[in-house]
Length: 553
Image (cartoon, rainbow, N blue to C red; front, side, top):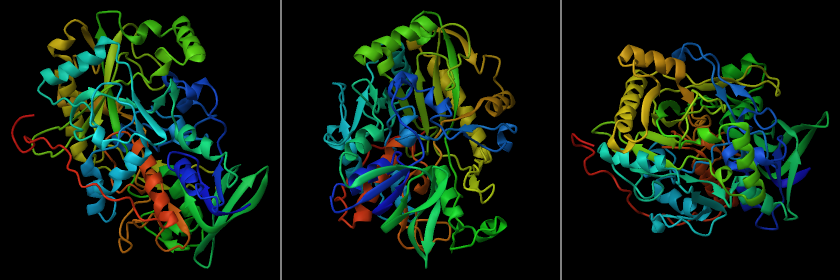
C-alpha cells in the first residue's frame, strides 16, 4: 500500500507511465484500476469494436447533459472502465495529429511540446508496419511497443473513396502520420496479428511481470494532500476505505472526464464551485474541468448498387463465420476495424492545414451496431477538427461515486454550422465522382431532399454524433496562466508531488483520433517525472499545401 509512484488509471497514458517508470527496478510503482479484465473477443477482436463501448462491464456509462445546440439531445460519452482504459474500447484508429497542432500547444504556453519536441516520442512508441504501401519511413518509429498497421483494403470501395477524392481535386497521401497529413489514402490502426493492440497489450501486461510494478483493483476517491503536497490516494475496495501512500508522486491518468473530477474532489479547482459542494479548497484553479472539447461527426450514407459491402455479413451466420475465423486463426473480417481508408482536407482557401477528417466504411451502420437502412451501403464519417465551441466538467456532488456533469456545449459557435454544412456538401461531391459510378445508389443520409441551409441544420441538430474524443479539461500551460491546470512538465500548479498526464492536458484538440497523442503524452510525461533529459528535438517541416492561400484546393 505504499510506492514511489502511484498512478490512477491504466489507460492510454497510464499504462505507458506504469511501464516506463518501472523500467528502473529501484522505482516501486502501483497503478490503480477500477475496471476489470480486457480478455475476451468483445475487446480483442478488432471488428467487434462497437460492442465494448456499449457494455456497462467495460464503459463508465457517461452521458452529456442535454445539449442546447443539438435540440436538447444527450450524447453518450464512452470511457474505458477496463484494463487499458479507452484504448481497450476505442475504434483503434491511429492518428498522431498534424504537426501544427503541437506547435499551437507550444504557442499557448505548453513550452517544450512543439512538434519538433514530440516527434521523437511518437517515434519511440511506434513499431510501424507500412505493409508495402509506401510512406515516410524517416518520420516513423520502428522499435516501439505500439504496433501500427494498415488493413488489407480488399474491398474495392476503399480505393473508390481515395480515387473519388483525387477526382474531386483533393490531394493524395501515402502516410498521413508522416510528412504529409493532407490528402486521401490508407488509414492506420492499432491492430497486431489480428488483435486489438491496446496500451494494456503493448505496455502494461509485459511490465506487470516486473517485481516493482503492481496493479491494484480499487476505486480512487480522491488524492490525499497534506501541507500542500500529494502524499497518496484514498481508495475504496472490498467495502473499506484505505489510503495508498506515494513516497514521491501521485500521477492522475484517469481520462478527460475523471481526471478533473478527481482534482475537484481533492480540493483543486474553481473555489466557488468547490465551496458549493462543501469541499475544502486546497488550490484555487479556475481551469479545472473547463476547456472541454470534442469532435462531432456525421455519417453520410449512400446505398450501394452492388452487393459488395459488409452488409452481406451483417447477420447471425455471417458474424458467426467471421468470429470463428478470428477465434481460430486471428484472420479474416474480424481482424480489422474496417476503417481502412481516410482523408484529411482543408475546408477552404486560407486554411493552412487540414481541418476536416474522414473515416470511410464499406457499410452503413452506427457505432451502436444498428444498421441505418436495410441493404447494402457505405458511409463516410466526416466532421470539422477545430471547433471553437467549449464545454465543461463539473461536480454533481461531493460523493466520489456520483458521475460528474458533462456539458460539451456542442455547436455553440456559429462557425460550427457553416463548417458542418460544408462537410455534407463536400462529401456529396466526393460520392458523386466517377469512381463511385459503379456502386452509387440513392443517398440514405441526409437524403437527397435535404438541401437548403435550414434543412441541413435541422439534420445536423438531429444526427450529429460524438466521435468520442473528449479532451482539454486540465489544460497545460504557463504557471502564471489562470486557466492552466498543469505546467509543461505535467505538474499540477499549486500542489507539490501531483501530476496529470492524459488527454485532459491538451490545450487544444488535435487533428484526428486522440489515442495516439494520449500515448505520446504518457511517453513524454514519463521522462519529466523521472527527471530525464528530453529526447532531442527533430526540426523537420511538415508538408503544407503550397496552394493554401490560393483560390483552389
